[in-house]
Length: 376
Picture 1 (cartoon, helix red, strand yellow):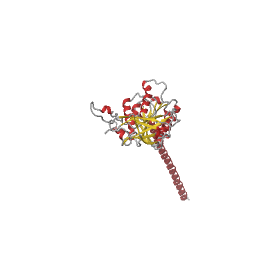
Picture 2 (spheres, rainbow, N blue to C red):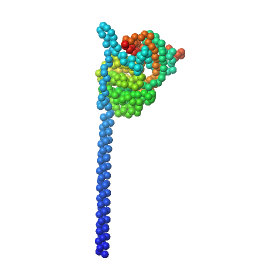
Picture 3 (cartoon, rainbow, N blue to C red):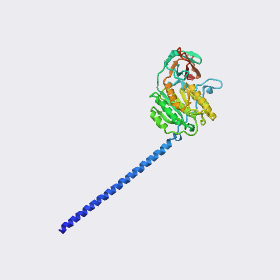
């Protein structure tokens, strides 16, 4: 009897020990789980914190993006002429390249052009017979004529100076409208600028990529407009497509660039780039730079066959962006062989005269003002 009681007691003791051991094991396991969970939580918190810091750092990517400065423009033919003899061509590569927008290839010159009516609306449906071409004031025979919507490489020059703060959201939406109404095959890049320019979105055909990057931007500081356009023209040398264009979105003149207006005009004149601008100008420009801004943009756009659109109401930004996209998709491309062939590298003036069908109002044609002839 005593032996049985001792065995039962020992069994209960062993069972109690096992129970306490099990409970102790569960407590240890719970502590381990709690420690692991805490470490995971701390890790996630740290990651989130670093993500916030990263987002804050990306608000103005111009502070961290380092874009190589393009070289200065080459000398013009006049500047390269010796005092007494000869003349070299400063722009031969810009006009004789096979992928040039206005190019001379086996003496064939191609001119893109758009036509508008008195209400500044795009005019389509014209035929070859409605155009006359003059090269250095000499009438030419049109050999080719097309209106196809070929893909375009488009560089966007986006103003991120402090004066854009109140206009930034609308301007960003206008850019999205422009991109989404373009040819789906078009490729884009974005140059942002304030105190200096930088490529903030490299070549892409994905509009979502551009929009996602633009959300992170924050306007501040001054305006290096000339440097930004110069960088955009230089960047287009890497373009995939034959057709190339710049879209400038800005609200004022330059007050920070190291390149001069003369250098910009020269490199634009020698390029094969068509330039459009959306000018969001204040009604009363307080500085000389802001007063001259519209003149500069108008001049370089007209020089390339593009146009400058002045924004009266911020609500019109989206419509203007869509109109520019439509113009790029509805250009007439006119080809001719110059009757006077001179491979002297000199500037040749272009003029297109319209012969509209009966019943139409006076129309306006927009085309590049000229090209450099190839040199021998």
